[in-house]
Image (cartoon, rainbow, N blue to C red; front, side, top):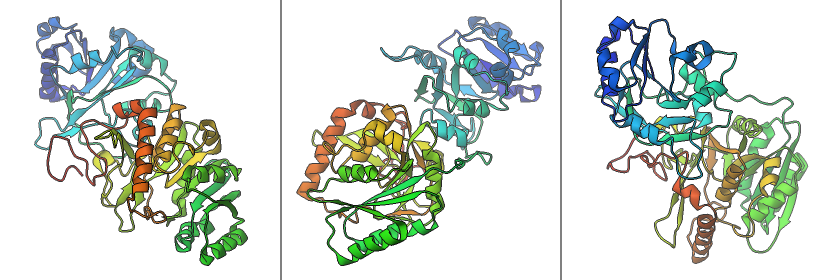
Length: 498
């Protein structure tokens, strides 16, 4: 491992780090201290029980990641970096080493990100429980800092002509590349750094040139006022090729039929008629089939978009080749959060075998959320289908929504999981001002029929995707953020963590 920021003026911090290394249960550790002379290192003889303590006064630790001339300075199979003052728990390296022997059939990770503490030795020290490796989050925020271990193979394979200017920059460079990742969900170290914040220098997604063709598909039934509010953003949306498809389920109200005629005249809307038993998945599939655009925006008629630029951001993310589904941060009409991603969990009984909970539901619309969960692009296993952007090629690749087994409930969860199984990302964009009047068309009453459909959907998801509920790569087991306004540790009481 490499220790940096170890100047003589920082001798106390260096001593704390070295002391924590001497206390490790796992002893196969080689320690290199950058920026000091050998004479400035305390107790060299004490480190004979490890693999040694070495001084490299002229070394910049970032050179280890980018310059082959520094390869002779480390002999181990894996690298850990730490600023002087970092304190490792006694079993920290034992737990890291244990991560290199995964369960049968799993590939040993090349990068392990670690839960940790922030603000070492201060009254304000806080736990930093990570969502695992999130390639979109690392692009926006240095949420890992040096709480990671990288394999020699990863370091050598990811070298490029452009030298990383920070550890965060190096991690950002990994974001678009496939490799095996592990998440150590034990706080094995404490860093002196403060809790992470989104970077002001984070690069936002840019539009493509030429812009993609876009189809907006809206399943609907009567409720003309809802639909009118839903489509009001169309006159401000600027795409050279824009299709509007309304999939109508047995509407009879005159106001609705008049609105359809108006949308046909103003926007060239296609009205796809569907009769019979309500089947939301079938309506989505028919709507997509009736369009031809590159990107499809699936939109519930009870969603109101107050700023069309937010849709443009979603579409710009949807055309990224690694992204399969783009969801949005949605607000209730009172301004509180309705949705910011989904947490999937095993249910509490055989009658309710799965839970698909909305992240930080009920939080203030101005809240940032734990580790800025409400203000950063995040990966999740699933997002609500109330509004999603997805490429037509992805939709066709996975076969659309499951209209046979999931006609009403959990079809959006299943679609997202199938997209992820094909190797694409499912992300949430922290949009502003998209309002969801949840269940305005179908109502909120849990009738016996609704409950029956809901439980049937749960059983399908539980049977089809049981592994996703045992290990959610974007959900920390120490945090509860599902269907609650503030994140909370499972072992604490009270309001939680904002």
